[in-house]
Length: 242
Ligand SMILES: Nc1ncnc2c1ncn2[C@@H]1O[C@H](COP(=O)(O)OP(=O)(O)O)[C@@H](O)[C@H]1O
Ligand SMILES: [Mg+2]
Image 1 (cartoon, rainbow, N blue to C red):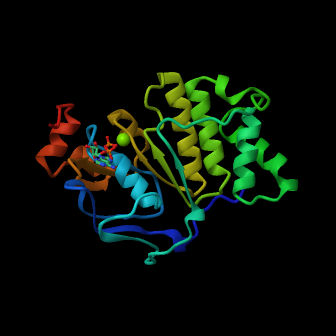
Image 2: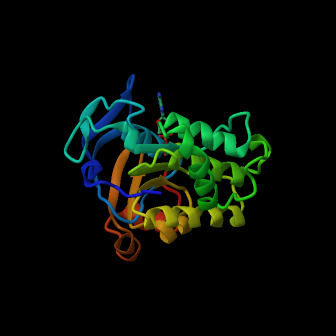
């Protein structure tokens, strides 16, 4: 599998970007640069704007203020991005069928799909699950199918919205291992989580959002050791941001 981010997709930059829905400001004046390398993890309480930021970066919703650029370009091909939703829907097919469908949608030639699907199912630890109905898999297994489908596009940037929400520790560990593995292959992972421990385990960079505003961002080690804002200090200490 040729998983690597060509430099022209990154950096992904938010330049004074904002999103208004009617009168409501959902994202407010976000300036943020996402570079190649270890995962960027978005944290913040419910309603902070994490999902909206990910969706805007993917190009699923337009910004109403400012802009988002890819490698300095506002029109980079979205084919190089993939998105896994918080509650991914399985097609009414086998596990393998779900991945085949994604490979077909990604334009992978018919003759290569069988091998690629097997490779992807191995990557997400689902060897031997190929013929099972995807909708009968556990939540964690379905999340892994969703990851395999997203990787079928051979993305340069992979967006994951709370990929382990509602999973138990064992299933969470499996997903985190896949994320680390994919990141080590050169895919830029941009993900949200409400799990501070997960942010510590996975993040190269951290971004703290609160009420649609970017409170603090930077290398994870620095963020945890030496937060610069009161909000970040509180969040790290496990206090509620309200
Ligand atoms: N289309 C929309 N119209 C109005 N409000 C929205 C819309 N989408 C999201 N919101 C609101 O924007 C805020 C941020 O939502 P979201 O990005 O889902 O936050 P998070 O993922 O951090 O929980 C929430 O208060 C949510 O209700
Ligand atoms: Mg969300």
